[in-house]
Length: 163
Image: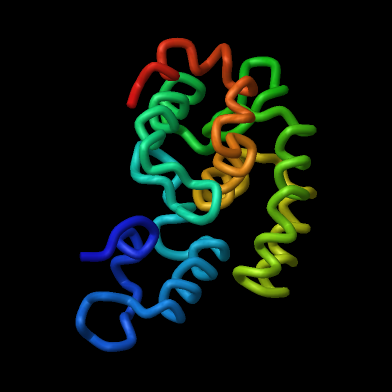
């Protein structure tokens, strides 16, 4: 059975019709998510992280979900009252743009030049306009194995003990 982004891309075909996507299928599905297809366009509610690449930590997925719930009520279009914090993870502009720079090299290697254009375009968009895939990817890129968890010390109150 498929998991992660593959499971969320219900409409995506698998190459061998056996239900288990090939590496090529997974790359195509991830590129489609990056472009806003499938579940990436759904920006309300909790679901498994659409990004499940290098920085994704399955054992910390409950923590991520708790943070999303506390920060924005699981609303990927959320904007704080003062307008400074945006998106599901309530990132300020500098953090979001910094995350896009951190993601760019990996995106180039994994998904190619077309996806890099999307990353560059993210820098010109408010974070709450990024699709679910990019917001999730930015979170895990910043989280970076737990080294970046301090960015959510307030919103993560009560979340960091979850396993």
